[in-house]
Length: 133
Length: 133
DNA sequence: GTTGACCTTCCCACCTTGGCAAGGTCTACA
DNA sequence: TGTAGACCTTGCCAAGGTGGGAAGGTCAAC
Image 1 (spheres, each protein chain N blue to C red):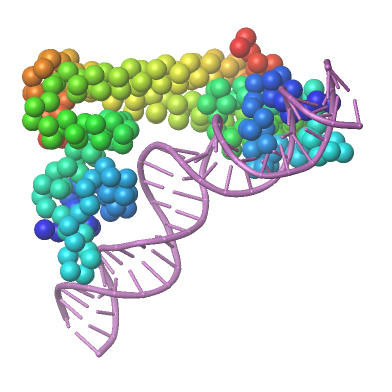
Image 2: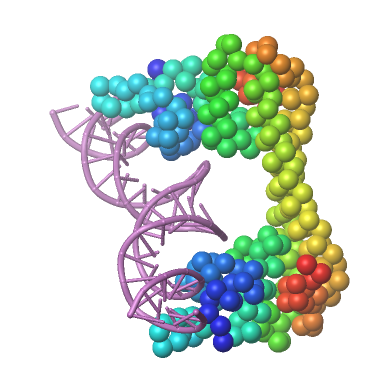
């Protein structure tokens, strides 16, 4: 059993976030010491690391709730896990496409901008006029 | 002169957002009719469209404030505009890289998941163990 | 017994957008 | 003239996820 600070250091999830996850019922309420301190086991840290890793992969906390349920369910179907993952991959790809479109447009505009003391700049002209949009 | 609804429709910025931009001083306070309705000119709509386009390119409202100031400054240096744009491009590229890393990892994991009724799934195993992370 | 590191709860901020409620105004039509 | 319906006003709440800080209790070590 350890305090929240130890659990945070061991899991890579900040104490602040551990309390938050508890408050939104992503985590069950932690056991408490007589003084009211939260007390965590190694198993709890294991769960926190799972969450941390899933966050690193960009899953929303809602998705993580679903993944945790599947993780704990020994009778789960791997199809359910795969579906969540692939849905997330699709969302990531959509987002990547969006950002790439923005970056491409801006790179092109910037390439045609002198970038000196003169005021004329195709970037502003494009924003002004709506550039082919 | 037109009401906020017309200005919104003409610019592609919702009435809600026009009021918000005014509240955070991104826009000067609009003129008002005797009844207190905001009144916009074609020039105002022009500015709103500029903002809309910049948002579509992923600029933050803070960046847009800077871009608007440069836009209005006839004596601006195009270097200042270019710097803002390229800084933003770098941020976009960083974000794209992050998302691509996530997507690549997940695609790999998903490719090795049966995706059927069986419970074993490398996605969960990876989240569990921290997969080479 | 005191100091300093830890814990507790609670509120605030970020950023941008949407939604809803309660009320005032304007337009068009009966 | 009245009234319906579309518009406007302000204000509050929500999201997602994280960090910061205040005010106070607890614990360990010296």
